[in-house]
Amino acid sequence: MAETTARAAVPKGFRSAEQGWPALHRIPHPPHRLPLLGDVIGSSRRTPVQDSVRMARQLGPIFRRRAFGREFVFTWGARLVADLADESRFAKHVGLGVANLRPLAGDGLFTAYNHEPNWQLAHDVLAPGFSREAMAGYHPMMLSVAARLTEHWDRAAADGRWVDVPGDMTKLTLETIARTGFGHDFGSFERSRPHPFVTAMVGTLSHAQRLNNVPPPLAPLLLRRANRRNAEDIARLGHIVDEVVRRRRADGHADGDLLDRMLETAHPDTGERLSAENVRRQVITFLVAGHETTSGALSFALHYLSLHPDVADRARAEVDRVWGDTDTPAYEQVARLRYVRRVLDESLRLWPTAPAYSREATRDTVLAGKHPMRRGAWTMVLIPMLHRDPEVWGVDADRFDPDRFDPAAVRSRPPHTYKPFGTGARACIGRQFALHEATLVLGLLLRRYDLRPDPSYRLRVTERLTFMPENLRLRPARRSAARPDIPAQRTDSGTASRGTGGLAD
Figure 1 (cartoon, rainbow, N blue to C red):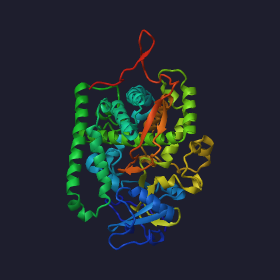
Figure 2 (cartoon, rainbow, N blue to C red):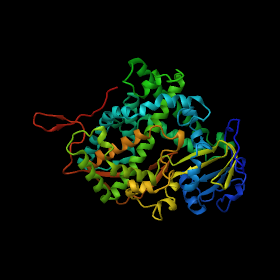
Figure 3 (cartoon, rainbow, N blue to C red):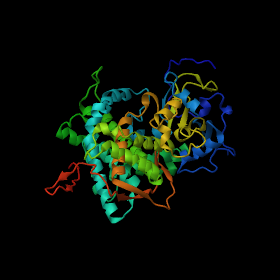
Figure 4 (spheres, rainbow, N blue to C red):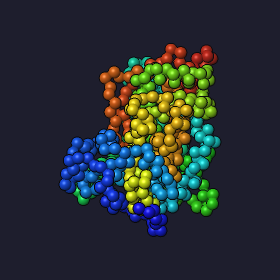
Protein backbone atom coordinates (compact mmCIF):
# COMPACT_ATOMS: atom_id res chain seq x y z
CA MET A 1 0.00 0.00 0.00
CA ALA A 2 1.47 3.35 -0.96
CA GLU A 3 2.07 5.85 1.82
CA THR A 4 -0.11 8.95 1.65
CA THR A 5 0.10 12.11 3.70
CA ALA A 6 -3.13 12.95 5.49
CA ARG A 7 -4.26 16.56 5.57
CA ALA A 8 -6.99 16.21 8.17
CA ALA A 9 -6.36 15.56 11.82
CA VAL A 10 -6.00 11.99 13.03
CA PRO A 11 -9.41 10.55 14.01
CA LYS A 12 -10.29 10.94 17.70
CA GLY A 13 -11.74 8.50 20.19
CA PHE A 14 -11.27 4.74 20.50
CA ARG A 15 -10.74 2.97 17.20
CA SER A 16 -11.02 -0.80 17.09
CA ALA A 17 -8.34 -2.47 14.98
CA GLU A 18 -10.81 -3.33 12.20
CA GLN A 19 -11.01 0.39 11.44
CA GLY A 20 -7.31 0.86 10.85
CA TRP A 21 -5.68 -2.43 9.87
CA PRO A 22 -6.86 -3.51 6.37
CA ALA A 23 -4.99 -6.84 6.57
CA LEU A 24 -5.98 -7.66 10.12
CA HIS A 25 -6.46 -11.32 9.18
CA ARG A 26 -2.67 -11.65 8.83
CA ILE A 27 -2.19 -10.91 12.52
CA PRO A 28 -2.62 -13.95 14.81
CA HIS A 29 -4.93 -14.04 17.80
CA PRO A 30 -5.41 -16.51 20.68
CA PRO A 31 -7.34 -19.70 19.99
CA HIS A 32 -10.82 -20.38 21.36
CA ARG A 33 -12.20 -16.92 20.61
CA LEU A 34 -15.79 -16.60 21.88
CA PRO A 35 -18.63 -14.65 20.28
CA LEU A 36 -19.20 -11.28 21.97
CA LEU A 37 -16.69 -11.97 24.76
CA GLY A 38 -13.67 -12.41 22.51
CA ASP A 39 -10.33 -13.67 23.85
CA VAL A 40 -11.18 -13.87 27.53
CA ILE A 41 -10.53 -17.54 28.23
CA GLY A 42 -7.70 -17.81 30.73
CA SER A 43 -7.35 -14.05 31.12
CA SER A 44 -7.20 -12.14 34.37
CA ARG A 45 -8.78 -8.77 35.06
CA ARG A 46 -6.08 -8.07 37.64
CA THR A 47 -3.05 -8.68 35.41
CA PRO A 48 -4.02 -7.80 31.82
CA VAL A 49 -0.52 -6.76 30.75
CA GLN A 50 1.07 -9.92 32.13
CA ASP A 51 -1.68 -11.90 30.37
CA SER A 52 -0.72 -10.19 27.13
CA VAL A 53 2.95 -11.02 27.76
CA ARG A 54 2.06 -14.70 28.12
CA MET A 55 0.06 -14.58 24.88
CA ALA A 56 2.91 -12.76 23.15
CA ARG A 57 5.25 -15.67 23.83
CA GLN A 58 2.84 -17.95 22.00
CA LEU A 59 1.66 -15.71 19.17
CA GLY A 60 4.79 -13.86 18.13
CA PRO A 61 6.01 -10.28 17.62
CA ILE A 62 2.62 -8.88 16.59
CA PHE A 63 -0.76 -10.23 17.65
CA ARG A 64 -4.27 -9.14 18.48
CA ARG A 65 -6.76 -9.61 21.28
CA ARG A 66 -10.50 -9.05 21.27
CA ALA A 67 -12.62 -8.18 24.29
CA PHE A 68 -16.25 -7.11 24.36
CA GLY A 69 -16.34 -6.21 20.67
CA ARG A 70 -13.09 -4.22 20.70
CA GLU A 71 -10.00 -5.42 18.87
CA PHE A 72 -6.48 -4.48 20.00
CA VAL A 73 -3.17 -4.97 18.20
CA PHE A 74 -0.06 -5.56 20.32
CA THR A 75 3.50 -5.22 19.07
CA TRP A 76 6.78 -6.22 20.66
CA GLY A 77 9.17 -7.46 17.97
CA ALA A 78 12.27 -5.26 17.88
CA ARG A 79 12.07 -4.66 14.13
CA LEU A 80 8.45 -3.60 14.33
CA VAL A 81 9.06 -1.33 17.34
CA ALA A 82 12.01 0.31 15.59
CA ASP A 83 9.73 1.17 12.68
CA LEU A 84 7.11 2.56 15.05
CA ALA A 85 9.76 4.93 16.40
CA ASP A 86 9.77 6.81 13.06
CA GLU A 87 8.38 10.21 14.09
CA SER A 88 7.64 11.12 10.47
CA ARG A 89 4.96 8.38 10.31
CA PHE A 90 3.96 7.65 13.90
CA ALA A 91 3.15 9.62 17.04
CA LYS A 92 2.04 8.93 20.60
CA HIS A 93 -1.42 7.42 20.89
CA VAL A 94 -3.28 8.14 24.12
CA GLY A 95 -4.46 4.59 24.69
CA LEU A 96 -7.40 3.43 26.75
CA GLY A 97 -5.68 3.21 30.12
CA VAL A 98 -4.12 6.65 29.74
CA ALA A 99 -7.30 8.16 28.31
CA ASN A 100 -9.14 6.89 31.38
CA LEU A 101 -6.96 9.24 33.45
CA ARG A 102 -8.05 12.34 31.58
CA PRO A 103 -10.82 13.14 34.09
CA LEU A 104 -7.95 13.50 36.56
CA ALA A 105 -5.10 15.00 34.52
CA GLY A 106 -6.83 16.44 31.44
CA ASP A 107 -4.27 17.81 28.98
CA GLY A 108 -1.33 17.32 31.32
CA LEU A 109 1.95 16.27 29.73
CA PHE A 110 1.26 12.54 30.04
CA THR A 111 -2.41 12.49 29.08
CA ALA A 112 -2.61 15.25 26.44
CA TYR A 113 -3.64 14.40 22.89
CA ASN A 114 -1.14 15.35 20.24
CA HIS A 115 -3.37 18.08 18.84
CA GLU A 116 -3.80 19.86 22.20
CA PRO A 117 -1.63 23.00 22.33
CA ASN A 118 -1.06 22.87 26.09
CA TRP A 119 1.26 19.88 25.68
CA GLN A 120 3.83 21.83 23.66
CA LEU A 121 3.40 24.91 25.84
CA ALA A 122 3.97 22.98 29.07
CA HIS A 123 6.83 20.96 27.59
CA ASP A 124 8.70 24.07 26.44
CA VAL A 125 8.14 25.90 29.72
CA LEU A 126 9.12 22.96 31.94
CA ALA A 127 11.96 21.35 29.97
CA PRO A 128 14.59 23.68 31.53
CA GLY A 129 13.48 22.31 34.92
CA PHE A 130 15.25 19.07 33.97
CA SER A 131 18.50 20.61 32.74
CA ARG A 132 21.81 19.58 34.28
CA GLU A 133 21.89 22.82 36.27
CA ALA A 134 18.40 22.24 37.62
CA MET A 135 19.17 18.62 38.45
CA ALA A 136 22.24 19.66 40.45
CA GLY A 137 19.98 22.00 42.41
CA TYR A 138 17.60 19.15 43.27
CA HIS A 139 20.41 16.89 44.53
CA PRO A 140 20.65 18.24 48.13
CA MET A 141 16.92 17.78 48.64
CA MET A 142 17.12 14.23 47.31
CA LEU A 143 19.79 13.57 49.93
CA SER A 144 17.62 15.10 52.62
CA VAL A 145 14.67 12.87 51.79
CA ALA A 146 16.94 9.81 51.58
CA ALA A 147 18.13 10.61 55.11
CA ARG A 148 14.58 10.13 56.37
CA LEU A 149 14.41 6.75 54.64
CA THR A 150 17.67 5.57 56.19
CA GLU A 151 16.54 6.70 59.64
CA HIS A 152 13.45 4.55 59.18
CA TRP A 153 15.50 1.59 57.97
CA ASP A 154 18.07 2.06 60.77
CA ARG A 155 15.30 1.56 63.31
CA ALA A 156 14.09 -1.54 61.47
CA ALA A 157 17.63 -2.91 61.31
CA ALA A 158 18.17 -2.31 65.03
CA ASP A 159 14.94 -4.15 65.84
CA GLY A 160 15.49 -6.94 63.29
CA ARG A 161 12.27 -6.01 61.49
CA TRP A 162 11.27 -6.42 57.87
CA VAL A 163 10.66 -3.31 55.78
CA ASP A 164 7.85 -2.83 53.27
CA VAL A 165 9.96 -2.05 50.21
CA PRO A 166 7.28 -0.75 47.80
CA GLY A 167 5.64 1.24 50.59
CA ASP A 168 8.91 2.84 51.67
CA MET A 169 10.03 3.55 48.11
CA THR A 170 6.66 5.21 47.46
CA LYS A 171 7.14 7.43 50.51
CA LEU A 172 10.65 8.30 49.35
CA THR A 173 9.78 9.17 45.77
CA LEU A 174 6.61 11.08 46.66
CA GLU A 175 8.53 13.25 49.13
CA THR A 176 11.34 13.75 46.62
CA ILE A 177 9.18 15.04 43.77
CA ALA A 178 6.95 17.01 46.17
CA ARG A 179 9.89 18.81 47.74
CA THR A 180 12.14 19.30 44.75
CA GLY A 181 9.35 20.23 42.39
CA PHE A 182 6.82 21.96 44.57
CA GLY A 183 8.43 22.80 47.92
CA HIS A 184 5.86 20.68 49.76
CA ASP A 185 6.29 18.17 52.58
CA PHE A 186 3.71 15.37 52.75
CA GLY A 187 5.24 13.99 55.95
CA SER A 188 5.16 10.47 54.52
CA PHE A 189 7.71 8.94 56.91
CA GLU A 190 5.89 10.26 59.95
CA ARG A 191 2.67 8.49 58.98
CA SER A 192 1.65 4.98 59.96
CA ARG A 193 -0.57 4.81 56.87
CA PRO A 194 -0.02 6.04 53.32
CA HIS A 195 -0.68 9.72 52.71
CA PRO A 196 -4.21 10.34 51.35
CA PHE A 197 -2.59 11.46 48.09
CA VAL A 198 -1.09 7.99 47.63
CA THR A 199 -4.33 6.23 48.54
CA ALA A 200 -6.32 8.34 46.10
CA MET A 201 -3.68 7.96 43.40
CA VAL A 202 -3.64 4.17 43.66
CA GLY A 203 -7.43 4.24 43.49
CA THR A 204 -7.53 6.32 40.31
CA LEU A 205 -4.81 4.29 38.57
CA SER A 206 -6.51 1.01 39.47
CA HIS A 207 -9.87 2.34 38.33
CA ALA A 208 -8.43 3.48 35.00
CA GLN A 209 -7.19 -0.03 34.37
CA ARG A 210 -10.40 -1.63 35.56
CA LEU A 211 -12.43 0.38 33.05
CA ASN A 212 -10.67 -1.49 30.24
CA ASN A 213 -12.01 -4.82 31.48
CA VAL A 214 -15.70 -3.98 31.50
CA PRO A 215 -17.99 -3.83 28.44
CA PRO A 216 -18.41 -0.09 27.74
CA PRO A 217 -22.24 -0.17 27.62
CA LEU A 218 -22.37 -1.88 31.01
CA ALA A 219 -19.67 0.16 32.75
CA PRO A 220 -22.03 2.80 34.23
CA LEU A 221 -24.15 0.04 35.77
CA LEU A 222 -21.45 -2.42 36.86
CA LEU A 223 -19.08 0.23 38.16
CA ARG A 224 -21.56 2.60 39.77
CA ARG A 225 -19.99 2.35 43.22
CA ALA A 226 -16.44 2.25 41.83
CA ASN A 227 -17.17 5.33 39.72
CA ARG A 228 -18.32 7.19 42.84
CA ARG A 229 -15.14 6.23 44.67
CA ASN A 230 -13.09 7.31 41.69
CA ALA A 231 -14.83 10.68 41.59
CA GLU A 232 -14.06 11.08 45.29
CA ASP A 233 -10.41 10.14 44.70
CA ILE A 234 -10.12 12.65 41.86
CA ALA A 235 -11.67 15.35 44.03
CA ARG A 236 -9.28 14.50 46.88
CA LEU A 237 -6.24 14.69 44.59
CA GLY A 238 -7.44 17.98 43.19
CA HIS A 239 -8.00 19.42 46.66
CA ILE A 240 -4.49 18.40 47.79
CA VAL A 241 -2.89 19.92 44.70
CA ASP A 242 -4.94 23.10 45.01
CA GLU A 243 -3.64 23.50 48.54
CA VAL A 244 -0.03 23.06 47.36
CA VAL A 245 -0.53 25.78 44.72
CA ARG A 246 -2.39 28.05 47.16
CA ARG A 247 0.48 27.89 49.65
CA ARG A 248 2.99 28.72 46.96
CA ARG A 249 1.01 31.72 45.77
CA ALA A 250 0.79 32.91 49.37
CA ASP A 251 4.43 32.26 50.28
CA GLY A 252 6.08 33.40 47.06
CA HIS A 253 8.57 31.69 44.79
CA ALA A 254 10.97 28.89 45.75
CA ASP A 255 14.10 29.48 43.68
CA GLY A 256 12.85 28.28 40.33
CA ASP A 257 11.44 24.82 41.05
CA LEU A 258 8.85 23.24 38.75
CA LEU A 259 5.93 25.01 40.38
CA ASP A 260 7.68 28.35 40.03
CA ARG A 261 8.12 27.66 36.35
CA MET A 262 4.46 26.73 35.98
CA LEU A 263 3.26 29.89 37.74
CA GLU A 264 5.76 32.49 36.58
CA THR A 265 7.43 31.43 33.32
CA ALA A 266 6.16 32.48 29.92
CA HIS A 267 6.86 30.56 26.74
CA PRO A 268 10.18 31.89 25.36
CA ASP A 269 8.74 32.51 21.88
CA THR A 270 5.05 33.26 22.31
CA GLY A 271 4.96 34.75 25.82
CA GLU A 272 2.02 32.48 26.64
CA ARG A 273 1.60 31.21 30.21
CA LEU A 274 -0.03 28.11 31.65
CA SER A 275 -3.58 28.68 32.80
CA ALA A 276 -4.55 28.00 36.42
CA GLU A 277 -6.40 24.85 35.36
CA ASN A 278 -3.44 23.58 33.37
CA VAL A 279 -1.09 24.27 36.28
CA ARG A 280 -3.31 22.06 38.41
CA ARG A 281 -3.20 19.30 35.79
CA GLN A 282 0.57 19.49 35.42
CA VAL A 283 1.12 19.35 39.19
CA ILE A 284 -1.07 16.25 39.40
CA THR A 285 0.80 14.73 36.46
CA PHE A 286 4.21 15.29 37.99
CA LEU A 287 3.24 14.16 41.47
CA VAL A 288 1.72 10.94 40.13
CA ALA A 289 4.11 10.10 37.31
CA GLY A 290 7.11 11.56 39.14
CA HIS A 291 6.94 9.08 41.97
CA GLU A 292 4.88 6.04 40.99
CA THR A 293 7.20 4.62 38.34
CA THR A 294 10.44 5.48 40.16
CA SER A 295 9.25 3.76 43.33
CA GLY A 296 8.56 0.63 41.30
CA ALA A 297 11.96 0.77 39.62
CA LEU A 298 13.72 1.03 42.99
CA SER A 299 11.62 -1.80 44.43
CA PHE A 300 12.45 -4.19 41.60
CA ALA A 301 16.14 -3.25 41.76
CA LEU A 302 16.27 -3.92 45.51
CA HIS A 303 14.52 -7.24 44.96
CA TYR A 304 17.17 -8.36 42.48
CA LEU A 305 20.03 -7.04 44.60
CA SER A 306 18.78 -9.08 47.54
CA LEU A 307 18.63 -12.23 45.41
CA HIS A 308 22.04 -11.74 43.82
CA PRO A 309 24.59 -11.05 46.56
CA ASP A 310 27.44 -11.19 44.03
CA VAL A 311 25.85 -8.31 42.11
CA ALA A 312 25.20 -6.42 45.35
CA ASP A 313 28.82 -6.89 46.45
CA ARG A 314 30.12 -5.61 43.12
CA ALA A 315 27.79 -2.61 43.21
CA ARG A 316 28.67 -1.88 46.85
CA ALA A 317 32.38 -2.03 46.08
CA GLU A 318 31.85 0.55 43.35
CA VAL A 319 30.00 2.85 45.73
CA ASP A 320 32.78 2.58 48.31
CA ARG A 321 35.44 3.22 45.68
CA VAL A 322 33.71 6.17 43.98
CA TRP A 323 32.29 7.91 47.04
CA GLY A 324 35.11 7.08 49.43
CA ASP A 325 34.82 8.62 52.89
CA THR A 326 32.73 11.61 51.84
CA ASP A 327 29.83 12.28 54.17
CA THR A 328 27.67 13.51 51.32
CA PRO A 329 28.06 12.26 47.73
CA ALA A 330 28.19 15.16 45.31
CA TYR A 331 25.91 15.45 42.32
CA GLU A 332 28.73 14.54 39.91
CA GLN A 333 29.60 11.42 41.91
CA VAL A 334 26.22 9.80 41.24
CA ALA A 335 26.79 9.54 37.49
CA ARG A 336 30.06 7.75 38.21
CA LEU A 337 28.18 4.79 39.72
CA ARG A 338 28.13 3.06 36.37
CA TYR A 339 27.58 -0.48 37.62
CA VAL A 340 24.83 0.61 40.01
CA ARG A 341 23.18 2.25 37.01
CA ARG A 342 23.45 -1.04 35.11
CA VAL A 343 21.61 -2.77 37.96
CA LEU A 344 18.84 -0.21 37.62
CA ASP A 345 18.75 -0.51 33.83
CA GLU A 346 18.56 -4.29 33.98
CA SER A 347 15.74 -4.14 36.54
CA LEU A 348 13.83 -1.79 34.23
CA ARG A 349 14.49 -4.12 31.34
CA LEU A 350 12.84 -7.06 33.07
CA TRP A 351 10.09 -5.04 34.74
CA PRO A 352 9.58 -1.66 33.05
CA THR A 353 7.34 0.07 35.56
CA ALA A 354 5.42 1.81 32.79
CA PRO A 355 4.96 -1.42 30.85
CA ALA A 356 3.43 -0.22 27.58
CA TYR A 357 3.03 2.73 25.28
CA SER A 358 0.93 3.18 22.17
CA ARG A 359 1.74 4.56 18.74
CA GLU A 360 -0.62 5.71 16.02
CA ALA A 361 -0.06 6.20 12.31
CA THR A 362 -0.12 9.85 11.30
CA ARG A 363 -0.62 8.86 7.66
CA ASP A 364 -1.44 5.74 5.69
CA THR A 365 1.64 3.55 5.87
CA VAL A 366 2.94 -0.02 6.06
CA LEU A 367 4.49 -1.20 9.31
CA ALA A 368 7.86 -2.86 8.69
CA GLY A 369 6.92 -3.32 5.05
CA LYS A 370 4.33 -5.97 5.92
CA HIS A 371 1.32 -4.69 7.84
CA PRO A 372 -0.74 -1.89 6.22
CA MET A 373 -2.09 0.75 8.59
CA ARG A 374 -4.52 3.54 7.85
CA ARG A 375 -4.05 6.97 9.32
CA GLY A 376 -5.18 6.83 12.94
CA ALA A 377 -4.58 3.09 13.34
CA TRP A 378 -2.73 2.34 16.54
CA THR A 379 -0.88 -0.42 18.34
CA MET A 380 0.27 -0.99 21.88
CA VAL A 381 3.97 -1.76 22.38
CA LEU A 382 4.48 -4.40 25.08
CA ILE A 383 7.74 -3.23 26.63
CA PRO A 384 8.36 -6.33 28.81
CA MET A 385 8.35 -8.47 25.67
CA LEU A 386 10.39 -5.97 23.64
CA HIS A 387 12.95 -6.20 26.44
CA ARG A 388 12.88 -9.99 26.17
CA ASP A 389 13.06 -10.34 22.39
CA PRO A 390 15.45 -13.28 21.98
CA GLU A 391 16.75 -11.87 18.68
CA VAL A 392 18.13 -8.93 20.67
CA TRP A 393 18.65 -10.15 24.24
CA GLY A 394 19.44 -13.83 23.62
CA VAL A 395 17.83 -17.07 24.71
CA ASP A 396 18.45 -16.19 28.37
CA ALA A 397 16.53 -12.92 28.16
CA ASP A 398 14.61 -13.71 31.36
CA ARG A 399 17.84 -13.88 33.38
CA PHE A 400 18.93 -10.89 35.48
CA ASP A 401 22.35 -9.73 34.27
CA PRO A 402 23.44 -6.10 34.67
CA ASP A 403 26.36 -6.65 32.29
CA ARG A 404 23.87 -6.49 29.44
CA PHE A 405 24.33 -2.74 29.90
CA ASP A 406 28.11 -2.77 29.67
CA PRO A 407 28.92 -0.02 27.10
CA ALA A 408 30.19 -2.53 24.55
CA ALA A 409 27.00 -4.61 24.88
CA VAL A 410 24.84 -1.52 24.51
CA ARG A 411 26.69 -0.49 21.34
CA SER A 412 26.20 -3.94 19.86
CA ARG A 413 22.42 -3.78 20.07
CA PRO A 414 20.25 -2.10 17.45
CA PRO A 415 18.46 1.12 18.45
CA HIS A 416 14.94 1.22 19.88
CA THR A 417 15.29 -2.07 21.75
CA TYR A 418 15.22 -0.57 25.26
CA LYS A 419 12.27 1.72 25.98
CA PRO A 420 11.44 2.00 29.70
CA PHE A 421 10.66 5.71 29.27
CA GLY A 422 8.68 5.55 26.04
CA THR A 423 9.83 6.94 22.72
CA GLY A 424 9.99 10.01 20.56
CA ALA A 425 8.88 13.55 21.31
CA ARG A 426 6.43 12.34 23.96
CA ALA A 427 8.96 10.26 25.91
CA CYS A 428 9.19 10.90 29.66
CA ILE A 429 10.37 14.46 30.31
CA GLY A 430 11.60 13.49 33.78
CA ARG A 431 13.81 10.59 32.72
CA GLN A 432 17.08 12.07 33.99
CA PHE A 433 15.44 13.13 37.26
CA ALA A 434 14.23 9.58 37.87
CA LEU A 435 17.54 7.95 36.95
CA HIS A 436 19.58 10.30 39.13
CA GLU A 437 17.25 9.84 42.09
CA ALA A 438 17.14 6.06 41.77
CA THR A 439 20.90 5.67 41.29
CA LEU A 440 21.59 7.93 44.27
CA VAL A 441 19.20 6.00 46.53
CA LEU A 442 20.55 2.60 45.50
CA GLY A 443 24.07 3.82 46.21
CA LEU A 444 23.09 5.11 49.64
CA LEU A 445 21.29 1.91 50.59
CA LEU A 446 24.03 -0.38 49.31
CA ARG A 447 26.69 1.55 51.23
CA ARG A 448 24.69 1.37 54.45
CA TYR A 449 22.97 -2.04 54.47
CA ASP A 450 23.15 -5.67 53.57
CA LEU A 451 19.81 -6.57 52.03
CA ARG A 452 18.41 -9.88 53.24
CA PRO A 453 15.49 -11.39 51.34
CA ASP A 454 12.55 -13.31 52.70
CA PRO A 455 13.41 -16.88 51.63
CA SER A 456 9.73 -17.72 51.17
CA TYR A 457 9.02 -14.78 48.86
CA ARG A 458 8.19 -15.36 45.20
CA LEU A 459 7.91 -12.31 43.00
CA ARG A 460 4.36 -11.33 42.19
CA VAL A 461 3.69 -8.18 40.21
CA THR A 462 0.64 -6.03 40.77
CA GLU A 463 -0.76 -3.86 37.99
CA ARG A 464 -2.39 -0.45 38.31
CA LEU A 465 -1.37 0.82 34.87
CA THR A 466 2.14 0.56 36.35
CA PHE A 467 4.08 -2.47 37.59
CA MET A 468 4.99 -2.87 41.25
CA PRO A 469 6.27 -5.92 43.18
CA GLU A 470 3.56 -7.12 45.49
CA ASN A 471 4.20 -7.57 49.22
CA LEU A 472 7.96 -7.34 48.80
CA ARG A 473 9.81 -7.07 52.09
CA LEU A 474 13.49 -7.12 52.98
CA ARG A 475 15.43 -7.14 56.22
CA PRO A 476 18.11 -4.42 56.16
CA ALA A 477 21.21 -5.12 58.26
CA ARG A 478 23.67 -2.32 59.00
CA ARG A 479 27.06 -2.99 57.49
CA SER A 480 29.79 -3.28 60.06
CA ALA A 481 31.91 -0.88 58.02
CA ALA A 482 29.04 1.35 56.94
CA ARG A 483 30.20 4.78 55.96
CA PRO A 484 28.42 8.04 56.92
CA ASP A 485 26.62 8.62 53.69
CA ILE A 486 24.20 11.41 54.46
CA PRO A 487 24.56 14.83 56.05
CA ALA A 488 25.25 14.64 59.78
CA GLN A 489 25.79 17.14 62.55
CA ARG A 490 28.86 16.46 64.71
CA THR A 491 28.76 16.53 68.47
CA ASP A 492 31.70 17.53 70.62
CA SER A 493 32.65 13.89 71.01
CA GLY A 494 32.89 13.49 67.26
CA THR A 495 29.93 11.16 66.95
CA ALA A 496 27.22 11.78 64.41
CA SER A 497 23.85 13.05 65.50
CA ARG A 498 21.42 12.60 62.64
CA GLY A 499 18.53 14.96 62.01
CA THR A 500 15.47 14.26 59.93
CA GLY A 501 16.60 16.43 57.08
CA GLY A 502 12.95 17.31 56.54
CA LEU A 503 11.17 20.57 55.87
CA ALA A 504 8.34 21.79 58.02
CA ASP A 505 5.01 22.71 56.48
